[in-house]
Length: 260
Figure 1: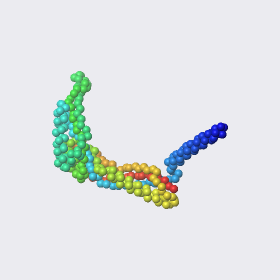
Figure 2 (figure 1 turned 60 degrees about the vertical axis):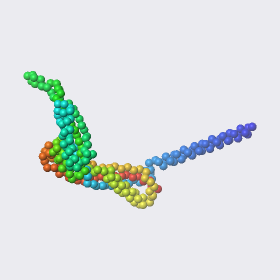
Figure 3 (figure 1 turned 180 degrees about the vertical axis):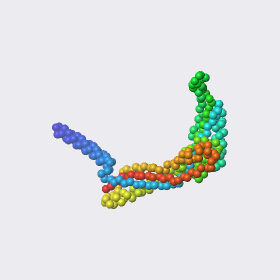
Figure 4 (figure 1 turned 180 degrees about the horizontal axis):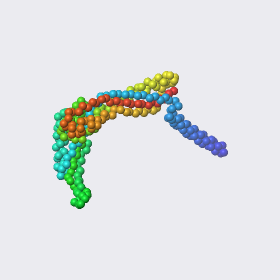
């Protein structure tokens, strides 16, 4: 009977040992996996690549606004609607598509004035209502950049005010960025291959990648560049000449390769 009990104890001891061995094996494999995922700086090389693309802007954008004062909201709205309709008609006659004319702000707000009290020394009194002001702001895209000055002048002659913020951009900036990034990655890969040969090691895989982009931003023109003498002069002056220049997109990549 005693031998049977001893055999049972040995049997359970072996089961416990097997379970413990399996558990330790799993933990060991997990530890090795985690160790492999640790920052591979001890067996890696880091390379940097740079790529640039250039493009002549193919899109001009500018903004303008119209406003009107009136005794009632409806009168103020009717006044700016008449002005905007005239400008829209002029822009569309120059080939500007309706989808490229976008309202960015429309507002109507009350006006006030101060009553002056009839005293020996007049002083400002209380605010009193003095009608309403309606304002309509619009952004226009010109896809034929060579005609940007002509369109700008036409908008001014049709009654647009506060002409500003003209910029020249590329209609598809992502395509430029992708091209520059591809060039940067190729340069980084070529550097890594050269280094691996010189070091006598083999490239295994990419373990880290990051990139940064600069350039390709709009070319802005201040209000002075739009005309000589300010907004209203646009209506009278010759259409302004607006050189577009060239936009540049630069991408820098950093790539870490595991080596063996």
